[in-house]
Image (cartoon, rainbow, N blue to C red; front, side, top):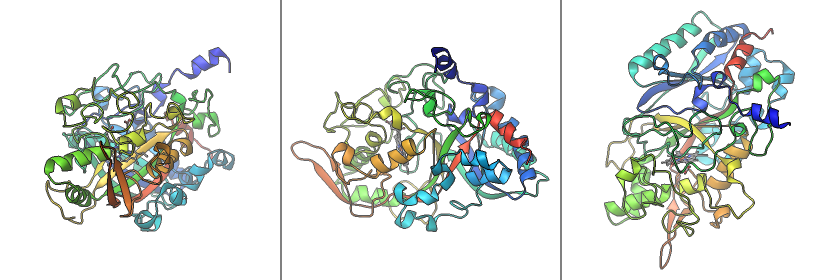
Length: 463
Ligand code: HEM
């Protein structure tokens, strides 16, 4: 590739990119995920034609009249149901063609998380289209929902087969009590160096320290140069692939009562429970990172977007005395930890979206009330194997890369009550035992999120 075309490749076509890919939603927000089945290709294409103008692009994400967010993604079966030609279907990578359920064993979706226990229709060939619809409040949500409903009106060949309501509370806290969505990759050319939301719900434009090296857009968007220095493989024709990406969609049920009981059983005071929880995640529940606040929570630090993510591991905490090597955030983004190994962390970054579903378990309650609650985890990137599957198998469900043998992520690992979690301490480390599974997979799909031009191409297919 010439210098010129390389430069051209990095100018992001923001108006063609579904906004959720490059932008975060400021909280609070409310919304829902819908899954649809297409029984008639012509109806399916008509639906896509009507939905495409409603998708919020990365360019229009913050425009006041558009402060509601709508995105569309399709499964391989969905592309087939729309009438995408076989040669094009075959140009998608094998993991996407197989689907998430077929890859359960490698992802650690075993035992209770096995696809045979998933909520129907998740993991079945009925799932063709996934819509996510979000807005800051109920009124905004209603207006996007009305638009979407209109797009489906009079199309008997398209059915809504699943709905999952989701939200983010004004506190930004998720079920285990933690603020989430702080660490995100800084994507080259995305138009905003890094954006973070605060509990106050504001957007912070401009540079925020601590997001690590800028990551090439091709890691998250098809058609651009990636961290390997080239434009990666794209589904064909180009108009279908360009500005699209792959999505790992997972419904993760959280065992909140079990998490609280585990903390209580392994601590001698409420303060120690908080410390244990922080050691497992790598941040206090407020969001303050342990590397910068090792002994006590620091809500002021957590609330300061200039500081809350501004840390690395090798200099500040090489042995994990502050933030354990096996904690969730240190596994999921080892930052500079692996800089003297062959692993290039930039090839395994996670672009996370998603939301909380289900009612909060009342504060202090230690018994499960039977409600379904958890997170809808959305991962986006151009290489599901090198990114999502690598992180899940090598960093979440194994401990070798940080010298922890088979020890798994304490929060999301497929632990089965025989799990351990090592907390480095002086003079001797502490090892927690009998770690149960706190997150159970209730379903998942691999999806393709096309660019907006590609949606129109799909709508006009002549099949
Ligand atoms: C039940 C499921 C999960 C819960 C409750 C959870 C919770 C959290 C929390 C509280 C944080 C700290 C806030 C932040 O740094 O943004 C975090 C960070 C993160 N999580 Fe998760 N998470 C879950 C699943 C996952 C999965 C499945 C992955 C990837 C496969 C993942 C990847 C990450 C990454 C990349 C970070 C940011 C790390 C950093 O940049 O320092 N999480 N998560």
